[in-house]
Amino acid sequence: MERAQSAPERRASIERTTNETRISVELALDGVGSYDVKTGIGFLDHMLEQLSRHSLIDLTVRAEGDLHIDFHHTTEDTGIAIGQALARALGDRRGICRYGEATIPMDETLTRVALDVSGRPYLVWKVDFTRDKLGDMDTELFREWFQGFAQAAGITLHVENLYGINNHHIVESCFKALARALRRAVEIDPRRADAVPSTKGTLGGSL
Image 1: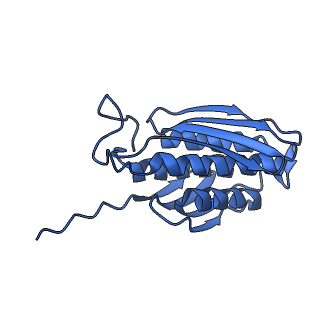
Image 2: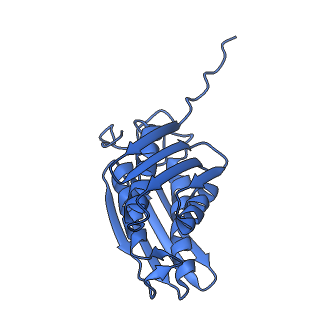
């Protein structure tokens, strides 16, 4: 009697080193949402923990950067490194559902994320803040994280805050909505597990 072959593990590790940052990422797509994140930026750690927990993607991140200057390089490069790890773990993207969407409420706030794991990176960011900072972190840096992530992961990503007052809730709902949309998009479609979800037969941009 033949044994069924187990599916290959969809996981990846990335080491990204520049003159400004040193970042390592370990990522497992078919995880349980466990995380171990240390970037040196407390608020960013909190958001990446939310991303892991609600996507069920296991995530380990270590980042050292030029925080004595500001948080820009560490924030952006962390997004890039996580995106690179996601793209590598996806491989040729065979069998994935490909599309994901989530609308997430958080108290008075509502945010919608729609994405296509297409290999064609693009970000639409419709999120406004009424404060320049959350804690020590500049709110403008959240767009930089999402841009770096979408570009490196090869994802078409639309993020829209429909309404909200509390800036913390707005940011957190963005990351939670991304997580839930990703969870759907990277799942294996049991009806098409051996097929690339494209009439072209390929999804470009995989790392």
